[in-house]
Image 1 (cartoon, helix red, strand yellow):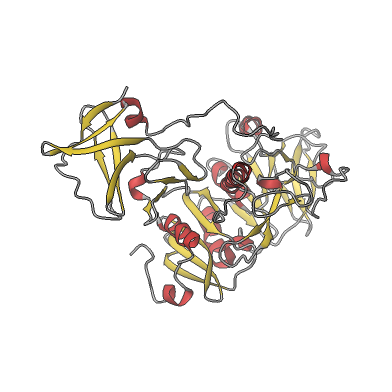
Image 2 (spheres, rainbow, N blue to C red; image 1 turned 120 degrees about the vertical axis):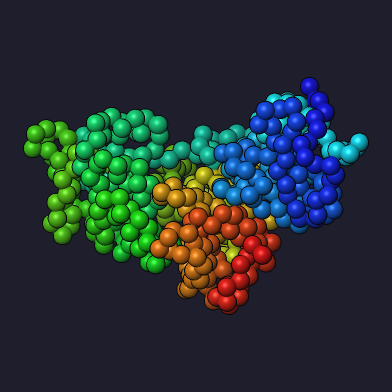
Length: 447
């Protein structure tokens, strides 16, 4: 039931355009709302992001009325509270707001003020007579398949992939009382996160094919510092390396005992974790004459995620190769495996199903990774970059790196510099991100 509550220590609605302010609500323990002024009009919404509880006052408020989370890029309409961008799945509550009797008051339900989320009000009646079938059940309503393993892996125990909760439980059971020798195969995001998470009280070795971890996505400079960060915790790296085979344990031949690299190096292992990526789960379509799979097994779609050559069929998430129109993309086909992209592609497909004639701006890919400190990333380097601008300190892991092609910034990665990534993604969306030369002169995009 909606009730009127007074805002503490606020006598007037004196916010300036573009200002945001978190305020406490009198009479509700830990009750807070966020005041936002867009175009001279102030509204009151939930104070916390509905995805992971980040304080939205530390996020980014744009002139066109979007409030973006500082952590993972979730975005909401400042006027209605509706979701504008993944990964949030609940809307923000919006509260009545009035200035009277020398104070400011909000009107809303106590649980919504404290909980800072609003479930969607779904109508059960059909808007259109057509039926829609969704195949899959992941972030983008798709499944994933295990990566192909090297010969000899599948016959041995204690070799794990990381796909679901059951895999996590199996890995933790194998680690047991710690002090285990763990070999992680793969030095991209999954491999690096696993190495970080298991390095305490264990001996961890990472095997990667690149010169440094994450080189393809973030370049050698950033990758080398991320490697040093994990080496400081005791993790050992074997880079520019390939795996030859898994060797059985002398004490229990049914389980892995070592990994042999292609140069002959042997790494003792009590368990092995494969962080080598996935393939699109499209085997069920290989004999379907109505669709043609790309070389990687994905489905090629248009900007609305309609499958090419098939009427009324959409593909979203990890199985979709779509034209990228973000900075530097120019419609190049990309397939990006991350939660945010999968969810946003699903939202784009749903929007086209409902209103097929309405043109929409493409979303900007955002992802994050837990590597001690939170690494945040927006844009896409998959189509290439030829330079970068570093602001802050790589050595202290408080930095923002702007990846460029010519003068155009195509991607931004940050650590310890919130909300630079969220702000950058909004500038990318609007096509007004500063050029390389401006950033090299020290321009702070938050000013």
